[in-house]
Image (cartoon, rainbow, N blue to C red; front, side, top):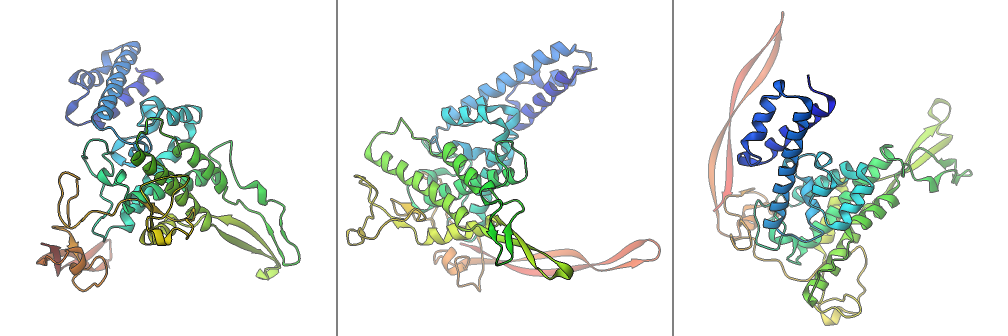
Length: 405
């Protein structure tokens, strides 16, 4: 019979063999789990340590193969196939040294960090699902970029701006939600609003207002890490751009805070209202950031005392902290570019009747489209027959599907 430690060790071994393809942890680990019945608990613990050490070594090797920006590594945590960060431990996560130190001091925030990354990735893909650039999560990337978003993470384009903004916003949203849910001891509801309100207008603050300020503080602490290895003017302006867009994402969460109220009184008379502040849905935040993306500001690639607009005749117009900034123009996403990891739009499904971004004319970049018929078979006209089963008909439908040439 296995001890509690032995069972946990076995779970870690199984996790390790499932996470990595091709049995990279070695057959010994898999055989160790299979033959656990005849092993002493101490032997199982030693086998677990061996398996975990190999897992850590493998992860370090992967980071060596795919070097990426210090601020972009953490986005890996939002990928479902990555596994459970809490089981890997802070030291073995794709974080920079400052983030690892923060993780060790606040390990209870790991689920929120993972959820924040997942939210950001999901909303990016949702907002751009019909665009030429569809926020594709790449499997491989050129040297010097993160495999998760590929070329776009370091290109300094409008797409880079959106990625950094939506990921920072996702972290704020997730941490703040965790605070309001009572999952952490150092934050809860926003206490600054308690005992306030307007007696003459018949309402007062109550309930649990989302403490978005704590979420914004943690997001700054975790993401806005100065890169000491940054050299050259181009790298410095790119870092400044990314930090600005991080803050723009956080400001989007704060800007869309809304006030919800509940009525109290006899027969629903609403004599008194209790109100609290709450965050908007992350989809709504994503829509705001998409609008900021559409109206993003191109800045000069030469930084002096502060960032400034690229166009000289517009430099008197101030840059606001809510604006998304970019340096370089976006590449042509119409055609495949293997060097940059851009797949192009060939084979993408389009809408023949739409005049928008998902329309065949725009999405296919004028190359035209192919049409093929897809047959759908489903159950229909279901009826309950006494007693006791459901009888359905098999219905077929034909749908035209259009894909870009």
